Amino acid sequence: MEPETIKKLNLFHKRIGRLKENTDFFQNVTLNLNFEQGSGSRVALKGPDAKTIKATLVDFRPFTLNDEPVSFNHICNLVEKSIDGPELKNKVREARDVWGKLLQRKQGSPSIGGMKMQIDSTELLSEDNFEIWMNTDYFHIGDDKERNLLERMEQTPFGQLSHFAFIDLVQRMCGILFWFDKQVIEPLISQSHE
Image (cartoon, rainbow, N blue to C red):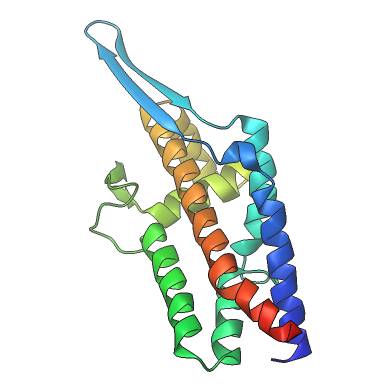
């Protein structure tokens, strides 16, 4: 394997180590929906606190951005081009397939954690929900349409459901990254030292 490739794999592995340090983020997330006649509905989300979420997202985000050297898609492409053995290539494809299924980019299937969410006449896909929270709430101001949508969502129990689904998705995506690092990246780094 080329020295530049090994350098990129080592960087990926190092950044995974940083992501794993956010242990408070990786706890069970629960959502309770309560409805009482005359009182309406109440939604309670229990999971990592806001500071923990923000800290984790700072470490997680580079794996999702195509122009970052540790982008999951970039590293998958790099590994597939750099190896010959079918075993590791299959693991790369498996990780990429699960990543894509989590983001569910197709209309008509249960889109968020097995639930179909719709705002007005628009079906909210898992990838859309991810982008709304990442880009409109946590990292960017977003355009007027996205900000308006997020503000409308946050005023209803739907917003808490949507945020729950976002946290759950990020936890699952991190799980894929951890598995990929252990099953693919670590063995390649070890082989490079032999």
